[in-house]
Length: 334
Ligand code: AHM
Ligand code: MG
Image (cartoon, rainbow, N blue to C red; front, side):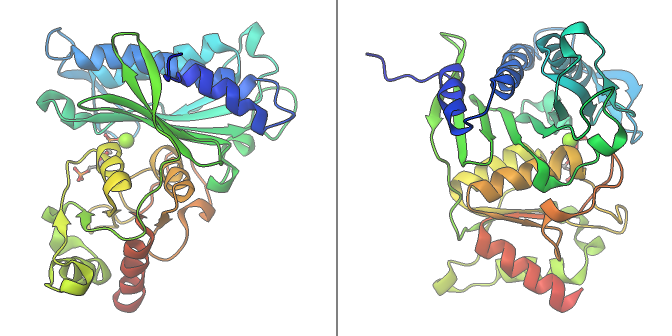
């Protein structure tokens, strides 16, 4: 018998963890997996077709959108619309939330937040990009989901995951019972379980931050960077600096090897750059489930108040002891 376990088989097996589950979340995860394969196909041939370059539109933050951002956004929203398990989609690429008003979605109870193509400035240069998703259960029971259903805190996430379109394509997700990773086998077109029960090392030797902004960082961050650079054999310092500018890629590496990823507040981005709902909360859920830690320098990311769809946050995320050290410095010096 083949030892391969596909994402579909795994999801069905895991449904038993939720005795009252009716299979809706499983179907939703399956729909996301299908959209991921379609986006993967396009990302892989990005250099071949006339899909590279600017779409000529800007998203809600005024940032230019690449054609593939738009394509990925359409694919994920389309898959969620036709799947029937999702009543509302919120996307980093859309100003407002999207209510799905189809017959099959009438009683759908899930809300999905997505960053359809994160790190998209890397597409033109063939560097890894990713998709981040997060799933909430709506609170109201009938009618369209309202903004109160949508603005839920990070601890309310039912599931979260990311897809990394890298040297191989992987889908990594959690439903709050550990983290599992699946690699896409292009020969059979299936995500196959390759990284069961992923754990991030408690200590690490990699720090990932855009040091180009050094002068604009808070003092606590500057002190932490210096701490990483100082020679000390007992703690394996100096640490290695690795930053590709693709949160999914940077965090995926650090999850496997042990490390910290930081995007702090800066003079130009006084609330941080990354979005709480689409990037910080899902990644914090995954990393905590893998045994790591995620804070904004002072407070746990998952308990931050969510007030707006496109709210930003600083983030310090990764190996527990590294994040604790950075937090200590933030509290001491900033
Ligand atoms: P995006 O969602 O517009 O692609 O931006 C998010 C990305 C992250 O993946 C990455 O960590 C960060 O922006 C890089 O920003 P910077 O270039 O300022 O270092
Ligand atoms: Mg993003």
